[in-house]
Length: 315
Image (cartoon, rainbow, N blue to C red; front, side):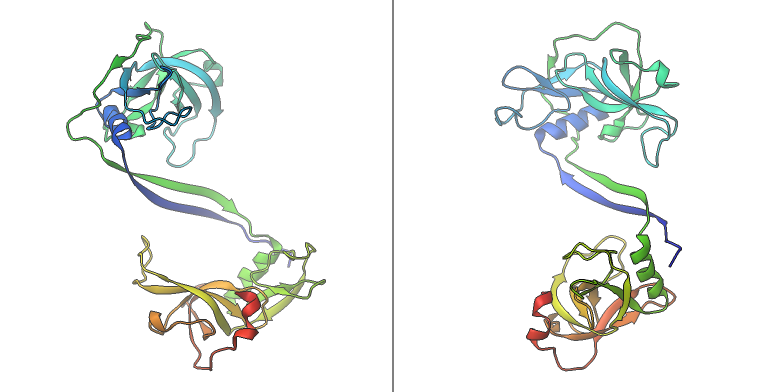
């Protein structure tokens, strides 16, 4: 097969976390246009602040306020901003040591081009018009030619009205995926409601989905072998937490399924049977999504359970 598939792929999920007193004060401070750091045992002021001393591991809580101005310690130019980055025009990633801080803060610098950026240049915070208590309350840094801020940070209680106690941070991996020759053939076979693997020329095992090489022998594979469609549940788990944007009611079962003729189990959801009746050795068959390129789930075939000896090597 000559043509290899390629498609954009976005892996994204929200990460929710609660904040301790130090992080809560830092993010709430940003909402109020105040930058807080924390003083360590040796007197270094860390910005952003952390809850434990990175050297001694002692708990930290001595909050101080630093200036919104600082110095670029290093930088890298980004000519092509990506989705959801802080600016939609070319910008510089910068590490900025704020006046009064002993460490540098990572953020972005709004500059007309790389020739306008240099290590040692003076910058200041440009605050976002709408602030919610997040690092994005700093819209960006901008060049600054004014007076430096105080080098000695001022003590701060860390107390604010209506403090931020938790955040939801989106995690996103946005890239173009090219599955390669072997997996392209596997995906195209699924369009025909077939499942194909590849046989290793050395150990003769059939791997599904194929990777183009045997994971055991390390040799290239090319011989296609159609497997299934039926298979055997080798192991499984019961899912009790509903995933966002996934229209499947919990609890449900996700299993490893060894398709007939395959020497590697693949993943699949089990349906058509109460979740508490799913078991190792259960014989299942695929149910294809209407108009889709993949199996929606597997259901029991009604056959007797497979003997453990027939699938124990795949558990």
